[in-house]
Image (cartoon, rainbow over all chains, first blue to last red):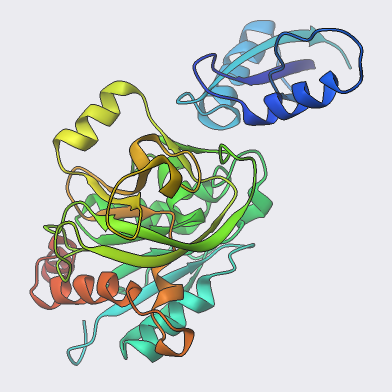
Length: 83
Length: 248
């Protein structure tokens, strides 16, 4: 069994108004200067794969076909062997 | 098409909430045939026109339209569109068409971060489509929007192609037809409100023509879109209908 820890984030060229709103809110905390905030998604997938290669192939396919929209999003992930 | 009436098929996803509005506009206001198409059914019931209605299909989980794209009915819609069949995606339906790859680009969160629900003015950019035949180029239509993710975006190459090929059908404008930042409700690139595909048989738009069809509601500009499509179907311009007839 492998666990894929997947992060989907807006591409750098895409404006993130949600991140901006959060940045603005942080500003009101008075905790010092925050240069930028970007919001994204974190997704955990348990894969019933025999090998890390197979887990990687499956994760790539899931990300490309469903979890990320390549027009506006990028994805990264790490695979962890586990129960 | 039966008895001179156009048959509209309105797809119903879990979370669709403008399906009945679209059905009402087509069936009761325009006097055409209309049927609901359940998302689990891989059957379009011989519809001449397929409408993907507004709403929050699958709760907008993951991304608006991302899950709906995998519904069994969508395979048939993609096949129907590939054969030249007429497809209209309204609001969430537009988002689904983008996710399904039937139209290019994406709809981002509104630049204001707010849900906008009000009448907007739309300038008809291309009156030479099967969706706008009843309009004049440059005509201004009053049609409402209601969305939180309607901020149209695409890469530069796609935008160049859309503009160059006359595939921007509608743009947000002021009442006089000027394309201004103030008339843009969501931050869409170049005030784009609706686009068509390369073959011209698929339209996606954020505004709701079905909500501006019944005279009882005060505005009827939305009828122009549906009547344009009815004209096109009646004229037998729809390759899909012809192909369908041949197949039978």
